[in-house]
Image (tube, rainbow, N blue to C red; front, side):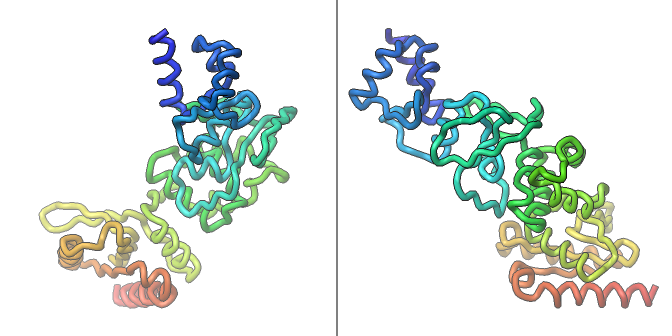
Length: 309
């Protein structure tokens, strides 16, 4: 009996306090005991046949785990999956789920989307009982909801964090794209706008800078552009135009806020100047309030260097 109870406790610990009646039965708890516990208040019914241990407080992930426990065909998807993956700038209004056509889950408070194409590669089964769409599928499905700018930023994030590759993103698009399928239109623009050779951008600020560079029709920069310093050391600039030895760094406060970081950045810029590079910097304030002027200055520097070449 002690071993049986430990299995139940471990299940609740690893599943956000959520269990279906069938899962508890597999652990050795009879249906009569489950509903007696519910009558005693030890279990709280959250959906038909799905319970929360009264020892566990409510949480957003609990709702996801309960929905997956209620219906084995259901995946947490769209912006809800994006939020679980940690995608930046994603606003998740309500809980979104993806199910195959022909499945009609009766789950209050959940926005249900149906799709005829859900392949095994689209499904991620977490050890906590939550099933959700894969990183590239989550981006594809949510792209229209996010909009072009945020979708591009999210793609750069998941490439940088190595949640998937550009190849898997394009493969997902090729497999799922359809004129009537949400995400197709926006993802077509996202993929078409990104050169395959470009390194992933580290931050949303860099993504916004790149958008302005493209808007002002500057030559395409090399992202994470390598520059060999004296003594053979190589640094990487956020953006670079090697033909004219012009570089641009985006000082995200997460990485460039302290005295030591500023001291290091100035040292890098001096070393780059020794080998003929002109390196400019834009801050978060520049990006948010004066980005057009800042990139205009870079355009002027490029023109001057091209004329002097």
